[in-house]
Length: 302
Picture 1 (cartoon, one colour):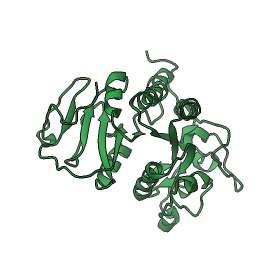
Picture 2 (cartoon, one colour; picture 1 turned 180 degrees about the horizontal axis):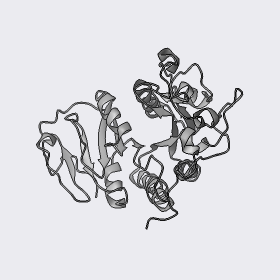
Picture 3 (cartoon, helix red, strand yellow; picture 1 turned 90 degrees about the vertical axis):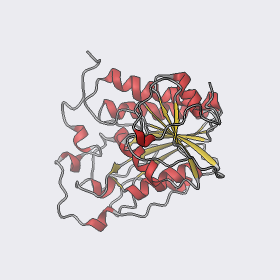
Picture 4 (cartoon, one colour; picture 1 turned 135 degrees about the vertical axis):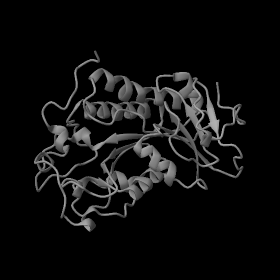
């Protein structure tokens, strides 16, 4: 069921109306009509990264369709569409991607402590559903939110350098699930020709707060810039990008960033080192505290 060009239900989000159902699309009343060239679906739009992008992306360039299992928690632009549905609902997902030029897949479990079966269901199977939906809907570009935790068990030293094609060394079940998601992206590019950009997101914070953020920090401004570059890049094919800022103490390759035209501007070193915290693990491993014993949950949800 494709998303209609004229929504069948028009609700001012400010009223706080909660509507459930597989195919519900909400749109602000009085939506302006203007030439918007690129329609982008944001899955997981109600999470921290999604909320930032909804606030930061210019609607003169991007028409946004927000997909999440919960209604968007704040104000949106009048041109935005809000789809309330579960990631497991393949029909709703395919409908949401209908007519879209790209999807930025943010939905998933992003912390430790869940059962592996949950990571598999949400991060691995959920990514496969998004890729399948993009293929079915003719949505040619998928931007996958991966993580630096796919190489989190890499030891840190003065000579550590992280390349885009280094072998996976995940630090947790979470990191392993993101490695699996990247592998699915590679498969769907090679087998089906989808354009897939995997963003290995660093430490997304307003400012660096831990010692390891000296290399891993991703500022809000640079998050916007790397997502826009992922959407703007001509014919990226399949590419892995270290999504970090222009940190002076960087240990990550910039080859993927250069391939899509991502030019970060912010630098963790500008904040100095005073007040930076973090455990010794942050000086020993790429993944920091994710390498601690006992951070993973059970094998299955009980």
